[in-house]
Amino acid sequence: PCGEVTGSKFSCLLLLLCFLLTAGHKVAGRGDDPTEACLLGLRLADEGKFTESLAALKRAISLNPAMAQAYDARARVWNRLAEYQNAILDCNKCLDLDAGFAPAYCNRAAAFFKLKQFDKALGDADKALALDKSPSATAAASRAKASALIELGKAKEALEDCDKSIELEPKFPDSYYI
Image (cartoon, rainbow, N blue to C red; front, side, top):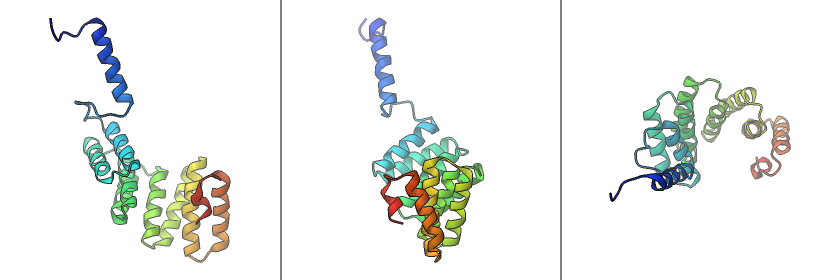
C-alpha cells in the first residue's frame, strides 16, 4: 500500500535521519535532549545568533537544571552581549554545580575584568590555571591573568603570563595584544 515503509525505503529514511542528526539540523521530536539543546546554543552563538542561542541554552537548562556546562555556555553568550552581571550569575550557578569546572572561572574572570573588578578577575584566572593544565585552557587563563595584572600595575608579572600564552598558542592573535 501507498505510504508503507518497508525494506529499502526504511533504510533510506534511517540514513536520512542519521544524516540530519549528525549535520546538526533540528529534527521534529528531538527537543527533549539538554545536551543537544546546549550544543545548538553554542553553534548559534558561534554564528552570531545570540537571541536564538540564549533561547536554546535556556531550553537546555530547563530540561536539566543540573547541567553546569549549559550555564557556562550561557555565560559566554552574556559576555559577548556585554551583559557581565548575567554572565557572573551564570558562572556562579555553574560553579555551584561543579566547583572544578575551569572554563567558568575563565568566563567569570572576563566578566569581572570588563566590570573593572581586576582583583576578582585575577583570582578567577588563577583558579582556572590551577584546575585545568591543558594548553588551550592555560593560554586562555594566562591571557586573562595578564590583562588583570596590567590593570593592577603589575606589568612584569603580566609579561610572564603573556609569554606563556604566546608559547602555548603562537597563532592566536589575542596572545600578542593584551
